[in-house]
Length: 381
Length: 131
Image (cartoon, rainbow over the protein chains, first blue to last red):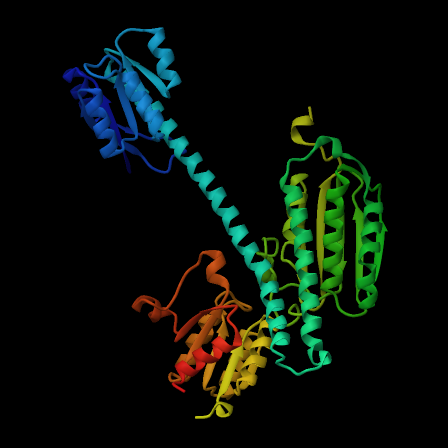
């Protein structure tokens, strides 16, 4: 049960006590609300007194008469607007004055209650206002949560960027202080590790660029016919150097028409990330199979590897940002922890899906499903 | 107690940080046992009683450091522990050992921000071991 404070600003005592009486046992409830709302009524006879109570009590709703003895209702409204208070204002008007109505609306009044009003009229107005106030708060909260998510992303990101800098700085200091000896060869490990950390940081920055790209709105003009066979072949060429180092064989099988409508950059992001994971987390002399299936509306791309696999308990968080599964077998593999979260976002942008099945020490199979006609929903008609 | 007789157990999953800390501590004269995971640290703790331990907070689990602090103190109540992490500053997750409440659940003797230099770590160890 939540209580909303209602401030009534009216010079007629009868109106004020009427509102108090009518709303005393009134409560508002909607199926979508988490709780019922009841009301506490505060009274003010003048605009000046109203402002005083506004400052002190921070009411949620104000019922405001325009014709007041001192400053006018519209001036109280101006004040509220200037101070940016989160309050819903309804004007109580005794006669329909278009002029007042327009000015009041311009200053943020959202409702008009005719005077004199019946209890039922007042109640239905209050019901409406409560709904508005509720929705306004929810929106506000959701925006705040969005900000929080962004903040968390940035703070983890800054941590990920600082870690390699700290490592490299530490190594440089070792050299500066000649901790391991006089010869440059005494520092083979620090130099090698510094170069690796720089490479890791570069990869992270590349992933971040992908990440910012997908956050932007799709541009319709970038959508075109794309042959996934071609995208897959290019991705294979890109990872080939790493595959050769580990003696990994990559096979591509296309079982159907592999044409889709999409932004080719997005398809590259998907294939490059998936394939590089299949190689990175594979074993020496392992295999990677890319199979393109599905000849109707949905096309599916299956990436199967003979790698280290993923424990079932790790799968839940696998697609989250900056998640890297830490264990004995992954500790020497570098990665930003962004790859799969990027793939998932891109796939979902096209109303597709990604799933994984995995057995530790046997391998993993990732399946990406995409609608063949990847057109934005509003263009479907 | 002389430094070469002091064994520092140091656990960190960042291989570079671990390497640098070990080098620094050995240069300062300590003996070290370096491990790169919570699991390894637990194995070592079961066999060896170190004179002091330095644990990273986030290893294979987000709270590996806390768990290690707890387990070490249960087994060897007199061994001081330093908890080192880079997490607090960037994530806004702040904790320290200043209040009674914090000391009750973080069972470390010293809490240090990561990125400290080996010389500083040496200072902290000497303070805790009253050298």
